[in-house]
Length: 84
Image (cartoon, rainbow, N blue to C red; front, side):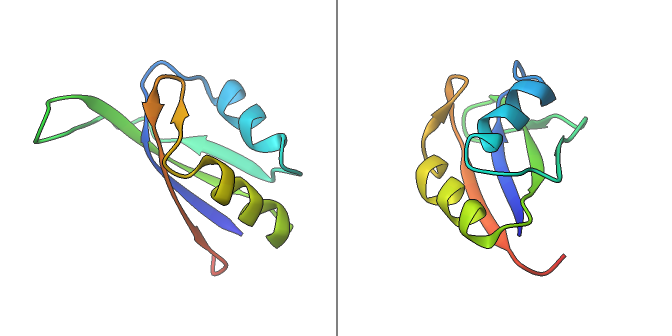
């Protein structure tokens, strides 16, 4: 399952980010965008990321546990897609 992650803080490394998801199972890849976006409402800078987890149950557990939770000081938002 492909997981879209929004509001990734600028201070997180791809290794630390990947390890967060590996706690739920195998991760095929975890990529954080190199593009920084600026929130129009509060001016905060953030990035987005993609995580691929081959096992649906692992991906669903990660989404259920991490969605709208603080990760590295910022609330992240996750969406899952089985089509990739």
